[in-house]
Image 1 (cartoon, rainbow over the protein chains, first blue to last red):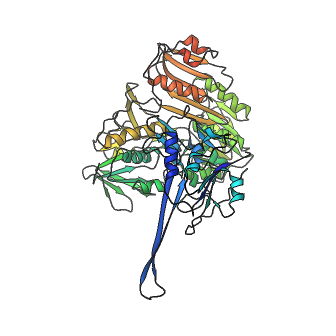
Image 2 (cartoon, rainbow over the protein chains, first blue to last red):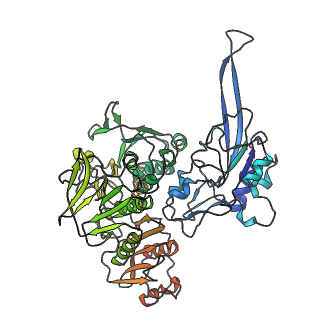
Image 3 (tube, rainbow over the protein chains, first blue to last red):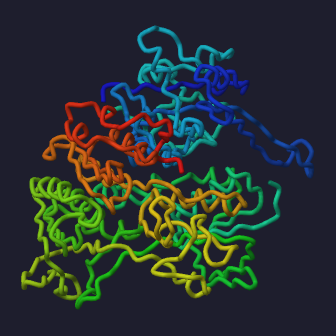
Length: 204
Length: 420
């Protein structure tokens, strides 16, 4: 494999507005419930002793959002689960579903990121293709172009990594352990994120 | 559908987990409890005899759905729990070491277990079966280059294991009772095709032979003894001689069973509150007009869909065209439909090369099709079988013609294969 395309997300900049999701849904004309991209709102916190007033408990809470689509993983579990070989990984790293071959069995829903989406009307699985139709046009992916916070990017994962030195590969709460599928997702973690440790996502 | 009912699902395989999923899709809002004997989230079994044996594949890559799905869908999981009985009068499931669980409706998806051979020496160490993750891990421990592996049974699991093992440098012998490979499911042309492929890769095939016993040294298997007196030396043995439906729980509860739990075309057992799906059932096929028993992932998923609808009071009948697959080396065998009753077989393409397809026809109607590495024609065949399409065998036979040209008349009812 010569290249691995993937997404970059700046979780410090993402405010969870979901314009990315809407732009994607609009472009692909997806029905209600079928979302190639999702925005996860992650909240956390607990009560802590107030150092200034002993005996008093104060809430320490925080929240952030993550915009997630198909992570075009290095070792995708969807591809292995597909009984009819409808899912393939291209030389550019994209993981694509061939709707002509898909039987709609939904076994690719084993994806820990819920990327494959069943389109009931078509009877097949559908998924983010990294806007493969825009290849070579220089245009940005629908979600990337729509983001008012400029929090999303799509490109060669090594170039994105060089550009965003503070980004980590996939492992941000509440996402799955990146060791499972080695997602091609770089995230600049929100300052309150817990970063999961997994294998590094080496491009072979 | 606001409900305070409790649906209990027994089993941790495809049938049970897909039923849970479909119940939520049906809008069922009550309590769902899935009880599985296995300590893992319901997981994918096909990799167990392939990638699982020859890599360090672990359970984290195998779940059918990840933990977050069950949480989000409010599906309670009781994993590693053994159901000891069903009290139908009290509508209660007894679970070892746990409080009993009351149900309003129950699904049994207990699957099957691998057949073990009742022959001398079958208790020796080194004799394996493969159905669970633990079976795979146990067998993988003996997978070393040069190790002699004897596989009893040339069905899907036996041959898939043979392909994985020979690729990992093991010395593989397959022993098969019938005269050809996959005789229960595939045409002779396909058996020959796969036999050549296995032989070319160094697998030894011993057809028309049965295992009569195992020879051991210090409690470990050393050889398989065949009916003709041959002694096949082995460090490791896989018994891949089929599956026995696991229906003892249902039988003990007094449900009608005939070699499997008898269900109707809506997956209901003889108790209207109890449904069953998957390998453990015998079901009447609307399509085939008789009671059949299918051991396949597809059938478990489809019965789960039908059962979930039925549990929610919706009448969905099991009228699906079944499909099957097997991955060996870089070959993907795909079969759609059941062949019985055919009056003509058409071979399309060169049966010596991947891409060929075999069509079973009855009065020109397509009943079944099997193919190697040709997923597009497989899909087309599934649509045709679903629509009872008729084909012109002369055109079909000639791969120079596009497949579409073979169909007689235009059928507007063509439907995707996976939809029931």
